Image (cartoon, rainbow, N blue to C red; front, top):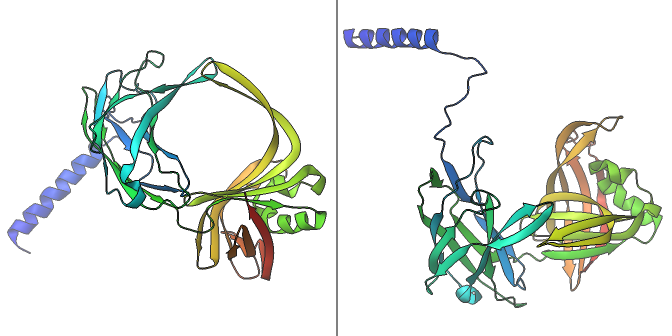
Length: 343
C-alpha cells in the first residue's frame, strides 16, 4: 500500500470517528422542513375509458406534504399542451377545470380559469380561494371526448413552465396519456343470483376475501351482482336487501335518497386471450372482529365474451398465506362459472 493510500485511509477513519461522536441519532430529531417545497403532480401518468365516453377527468394535485405546512395563498400559472392526438382524438379540448370546496358539510364545485391558444396549448391559472384561504389542494381537468361507440385513438397531455412566487415545483408525473380501452371485458356487467345454491357457489369463491360476505344468507341479498371493469381496476358489487339513507349536499342543495347497502370486492385485473387474473388485498379479522392482518390475494380463471354476455370461469383463489398447492382458499380444477350480462 502506498503512503498516499495510508494517509487517505487514516483521514477517512478520523473523519468517520468524529461524525459518529457528533451525530444525534435521537428518534425525536425532526427534519428542517421550513423551506420544504410543495410539488404539483398528476394523479396518474396514463388512463383509459370506454369508446363511448363523452368526457374524462384528470386530477392534478399537490403531492404528499407535511400537514403542519399551509398550502400557498398566491396565484400559480402552469402551461399545458395537448399533443400526439391520433384518430378520433384530434379534436379533444379542455371543457373546464374544476375543484371542490366544502362549507358546512356541503360541497361546492368551482372553476379555475384557463386560456386556450387554439392550437392545443394554453395556461392554467390556480388562484387562491377565499373560503379555503389558499389554492385548492386538488383540481380536475375535464376533457371533451368524441363519445362515439366506435371511437378510436389516443392523446397526451403535458404540464410545463410553472410560475409562482410560492415555494413550489412541478413534480412527476407531469405528462399523461389517454387511450380508448380495447379489452373486451371493459364496462359494467350484471349477474343475477336466483337461488340459494347459486349464492353458495358465489360465496365459495369470494367469501374467503370478505368476512361480511361470509356471514350473509341468500335472504340478505337482492340477487344483483355487478362487475365493473375500468382501466386496470375493477370491483364486484353485491347488492343487499338492507337499505340506508344517503344525504348529500352539492352547491347548496341537499338531497336524501334511499339506497341498497352493498358489499364490494376490489382488485386490479389482467384479461387477455381468454385468461383473466385478479389481484387485490383482503383483511383478516379476529374472533372479536378486529383487524389482525391484510393479505394480498390472486384469483385465477378464464373468461369468454359472447355478444352481450361475459362468462367468468374461476378455478383458484390464493393469498400469500395459502399459496401452496392444496392450501388454496378456493380451488376447483373445472372451475365455477358465472355468466354476466352487459349492463
